[in-house]
Image (tube, rainbow, N blue to C red; front, side, top):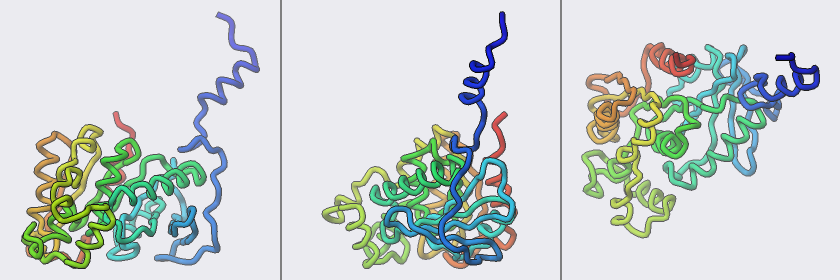
Length: 281
């Protein structure tokens, strides 16, 4: 068989040569004059009309992996900072009061597209779901398992009936919040409480897409959480995900309430995302 001509070889190189996570040889620089966050360069900019934040590591890991904070950027952020130090980019999109509703997922889609297409980021971000941020992360992962690397949940809301529903709505044992429940109804476009309760796509009831894709979950939670009770949220997700044969691990904090979030030693979180990033054998 004759070797390919030079022109044919160049075509093959153009088609098959790796050019980064997105196919973009020269990803754009993040906009805006950088400020500092935990000693790292922080960029605040707009994607369309949405406010975004990206923290850039001093030396990015190959493939430009990133972790995406679902809510409360900068709160209890020891693990976030450790990941940036380890070479991960950290990102956040400001879409508050949407509780992971379809409108939030749609806005996340626009941000994800920009991060991958324009800025050369890895096509599968790791997700960090702290408290109500769990609704954003789990609903994104269920809608886009092919665009999700792994999910770390920290005292996370996994069922909106539990929070903000909870005891005030007789939907759970936690404190709940009447005001936040009204916001949730509006975010989802539910006409009344009954329609919200009948919703079939709460994360606790919609784990199959994640399990089929074998997306790893790490659940960190206190077993005395009076706001987001573990038995109605993290523990229930752990049991159901394990029953589906999907990869899940947990760290239970005995006697801990909803706050403080996080771990004193964040090494398990960094290790969790690093393991998810490793090429599958």
